[in-house]
Length: 242
Ligand code: NAP
Image (cartoon, rainbow, N blue to C red):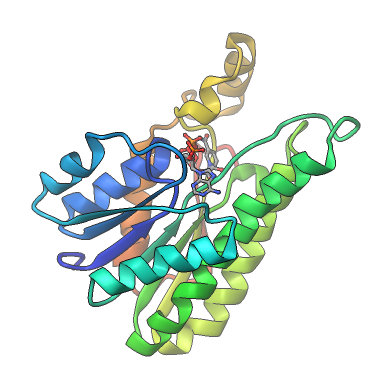
């Protein structure tokens, strides 16, 4: 079903984005691999081992014109754009009492505005095709909040609202839009946590362990393949939110 389709993954150089790109490649999809600073030299080859094409595109998705460049490159190279996974995301954690304007703006600009930018540029194509799947990375923190993450929680809650509004707008043309809300997943983003915090966090997870990037990647593939699910938030969190 995904064979020969075009999948754009933002922030795909590492972590969840990398796993998502590889999971779609394994299904036979061509991958538009967005990165911002560093593209690991081996990654395009790893993707192409599945017999698919890989187009790396450098773009900062928080910048409207760079997001346009990403979508234009994808549309120019491939015949259609079938799936967009808005994965690029950052944290700038600190207590609200100390949170600077720059901490707020940076997180909102990447996590929420970046999601708007790419979706805004791709949506015309998908509506014209009368098909497409948009998958946005939210977080359990956007659902339940977290100390030291007011900016991140706001951005990820905003992504959920954006997902539902978009889903309603585009459903009649066969385009779906869903969000994934991961809990704690083993990536560089969570590697910074101290052993003490990790232990505390594991205690809060019913399945008693952090998730793997691949757990999220499989969910993204599922949401792209299933054409009767839209406007949903799928938690991949070991049962943290239920
Ligand atoms: P990660 O390992 O830190 O990777 C994030 C990727 O996004 C990096 O490759 C980064 O590139 C890229 N990126 C950041 N800002 C960008 C921008 N403006 N334009 C393009 N690319 C950009 O993070 P992760 O853990 O894989 O997280 C992926 C997504 O899942 C994020 O949206 C995150 O909020 C969400 N999430 C993660 C967890 C978790 O436990 N890990 C939980 C819930 C939600 P650079 O290296 O150039 O910065």
